[in-house]
Structure formats: C-alpha cells, structure tokens
Amino acid sequence: HRDLHSFPTRRSSDLYLLKNDEVFVVHCKGELTSCFANPNHKEHICVICKSIFTHGINLLQNPNINIIEIPFEQERYPEIPLLFDDIDALKKFKIGNAEIGLGAASSLISTLNKEHNLDTVKYKDIVYNEVNNSYYVYLFFKKVILELKPDRVYLFNGRFSTILPAINVCEELNIMYYTHERGGSLNKYWIGKQT
Image (tube, rainbow, N blue to C red; front, top):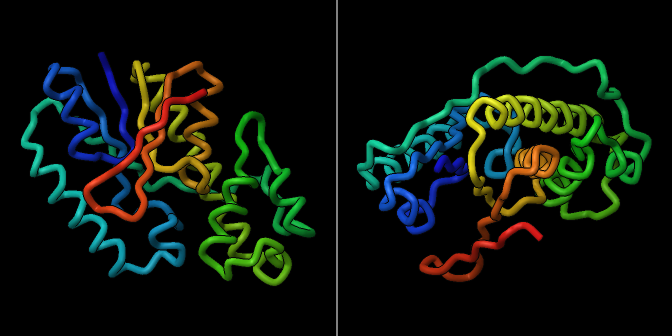
C-alpha cells in the first residue's frame, strides 16, 4: 500500500508504518508564498515550521517514510484575474476542478480580519497571491498523485487554500482521502473519511 500524508501525525501514520506500508509526506520548506500558519511568508515562521517538521519526522525513526519536497517553481498563472470584484466572485472562481477561489477566501477570511465580507479590492494583491499559490498547490499535488497512485491520502482540515486543492485532486482522480482535525486538546485528534 502507498499512503500520502500532507501532514504527519505520530499516531495516524504509525498505523501504516507498523504494517510496513510505504508512506509519503509532502513537505514545504518555505516554497509556498502563503500558508495558513504563515500567511505573510515571514522567514522566522518558516524556520520554526521546518524545525518542528524535522523533529516530528525524526521521532518516527522509520525508513518507510519518504519526504516529497515542494519545488520552488511557482509562476504567475494567466488564468487567474488580477482583481476579484467582491468576495462572492472570489468564492466562485474555479479552474477546472480546482476550487481555488473558495479555498483562498476561507484562508484570507481567517487570517486577514475575520470578516466574512472580505474587501477583495482593498486586498487585491494579497488575494491574487493566495489564489495563485492555491493553483500551484493543485498542479503540484495532481502531479504527485498521478506519479505515486497512493491508496489513500491524509490532509489537515480541508478548507484552506493549500489543502482544498489537494482534496479537489483526490476527488477528481477517485483517491480515498481523510481529513485530520484537532481542537481544544493536544492529546486528541479526529480523522474523518471522505463521504
């Protein structure tokens, strides 16, 4: 079996590692121009994130874990408009199966000002970057999935701009996926199977 995790969690990946399944973990070392943990791409936050990732992977001490690093190849995609008139236009924006506008809206509403009626004109450069980054994730993840053909994929949450495109890929290619969620307790988490 081949499993692809976008975020490694000790207990969820151990299950498959103990069965000697091959596990692939997609890892960003700061190549993405935005993410939920670091929407403004501050270097010191990237450093902390990379350190936490390395520590977590080292704790597993398992040769069946393969790291796939996101390449630094992002470009400006001509399909993406420079300006969205309003939040509804952003939410409805798709390229093929990729709901990149919806994911971008969810991330930006959470990180910018917690305002559901986000001013897409005022924040046009930030919005453009988020949408462009989201489409890059979609294209990269689709390439990885087509190469690896995993049996299942694990993702964190599912609604953000860097995760929803991966769900879109799984649905498009009929790959079983699960979303990992955590709340008020550091010792508990929840994994939900696609419905």
